[in-house]
Image (cartoon, rainbow, N blue to C red; front, top):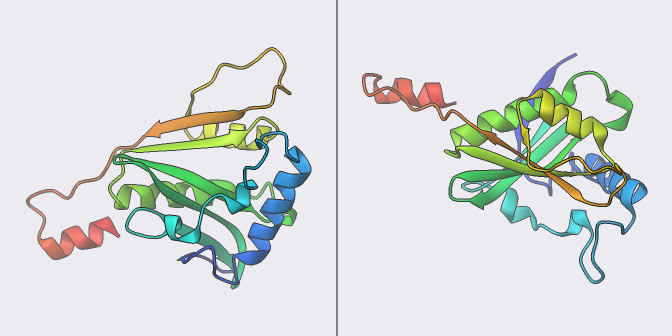
Length: 178
């Protein structure tokens, strides 16, 4: 079994099964609960170019050439990247794939010079809440008395951005940043 990360675009045909499954998951968990009338569905909100360098990126985790997980980020502000589209194939859950994708995205966010990550997840995704809390994210919300209160749950994480030492030769610094 061979796993590899590939940086690509949400338009990559290898990403489509995962994105379709993610859209189905959002629809089945939330329907229109988190959507104002007239707003686009979550998967239709952001055009692919927002997840492209230099301000964003989109990664797939391939296992033997098949996408089993993925995620993306886009610019939130000058120093903050916003994670979006974190997903693992539903038949392959509880294997640590989401953690692998999250760590890879964090590394790429750093490489692209951001100092902070922001994200939101939905109130009906306790597994996502657990993932983010388990990886050092700070919840930017207070738990309600009723866990079924419709809302988005924001998180943040401050990053230590690796900066090459002035004593490292330019070609070594480039290798360090990869």
